Length: 407
Image 1 (cartoon, helix red, strand yellow):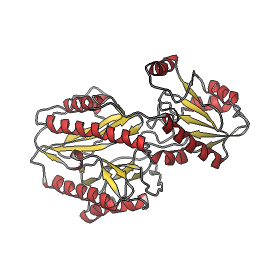
Image 2 (cartoon, rainbow, N blue to C red; image 1 turned 135 degrees about the vertical axis):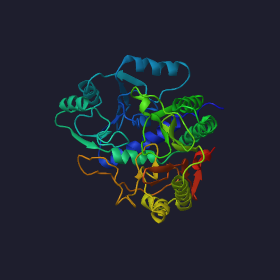
Image 3 (cartoon, rainbow, N blue to C red; image 1 turned 45 degrees about the vertical axis):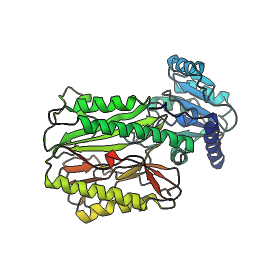
Image 4 (cartoon, rainbow, N blue to C red; image 1 turned 135 degrees about the horizontal axis):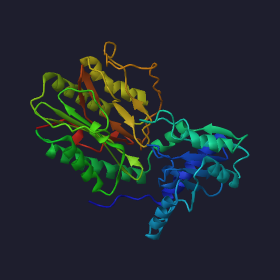
């Protein structure tokens, strides 16, 4: 295995040029790009770093990285001392929103319109933005009279189209996921606990010298279950489930190189599985193949979703999670409601769901997570991997997780 690909200062300049072009279009003199505890780590697009704070990015002049503790500043300096150049020279600690507002004033950005990334952003587990409410109150309270404009959507669209250097990181993360899927296929057996599967998969990905995006691994097991998310035993005192014949061991892996995330859906079937699962497997694979056939530059994202949902529509299946979504950021999501008219999950909603329907034209360099899932009653089959939009069509980066492994 080789070392993770790094991003150059030329890549930094490319990104900064694109962001400043967007700022000029919106009439913004400055931009505050949030990171904080956001899953998508937007600040890293400016700084090639993640410090759980934000970046103050002026239209002209040098940006400032703001973080919550001196620990993060010294960590960055240690990288520079070891020969890894920083994209931003000015790192500071700002423990309140008011302190961050002081930096905005220092940069001469308090007299016009200030852009914000992360205020109204939306990502899995983060439906209400990425900026803490207390910080925002302090920040805006210290900048009375300034007009703020959230450009999270526009910024996310900018991030979607990857450069050659970013694609190299995507490919590396996909290799780590493929290796982890191979390990899962080896270790899953009757009598093995879920914790063993998670430990071995995590170990294999971390051996590539990269990180894992929250929640790292989504997984569950059983012959028929709609439970989906981080294993329950990771957040409460509950014994991990022991695998048995007839089970599906399903997992979603989320490695990232730099801030370039990929996702794969790995399913192992401990045969014999029942006829309903066999049908769901066939439909999920047909959806995957339909997506590969449809994806090319110039089509709408909605056209891709429509192609992938057709096998479910014909078979009478429905989807529990998106059939496909973008990564880096997880911004475009295609989860159609086909065949759900009579589905009763037994879940009470405080109000009607309000999903955001985003539009985008597919362009070369976009990266998608194909994750077709087909459901009937409580049965669900999930598979898929990473796909890049190319100049002429698309390219698969994963093989093992795109089909169910039978043992």
